[in-house]
Length: 195
Image (cartoon, rainbow, N blue to C red):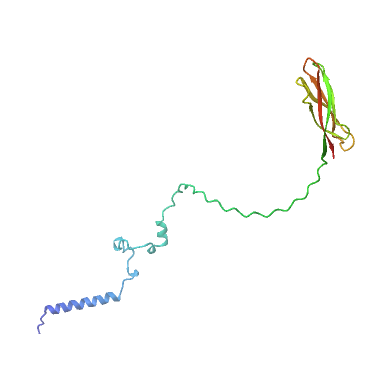
């Protein structure tokens, strides 16, 4: 019996082949074990499709560049606002009372000594405050013509008893006359009474 091949028969056969091949491909996917080593190269990978998560830790470390040099120091920032004033601290404890000071002086008084020195000569005159008095200072009286007179303390006599013990009671003043004629003067002493 002679079989006649028609176009519709050929189309039917092709459809059957395609259907069978598609089912077989879906049933058996290719695994990594079935791929030969180094078989997949760069041209088989879509550009831009791989991320860092697809790489090993070593590969990611190899991609990291060396640390660059330290950059220049930046400019100083603006000065900050002044902080608020802190609370006042508590008052400290009062210290112990110091020792009592020495007794003071009472009662100012004045003593005078009159004298005269001939021209170009010198002599010593005493300014004496008297017993139990202390000599603080001495000077020429403002009424004396002492432009040509020079006075210097030469001796100091201290008391040996009483409240003024050891303090100066009188002083010897050396007066020199630089003029050619006799010059009269008055020495004034300032005295106090020890307490």
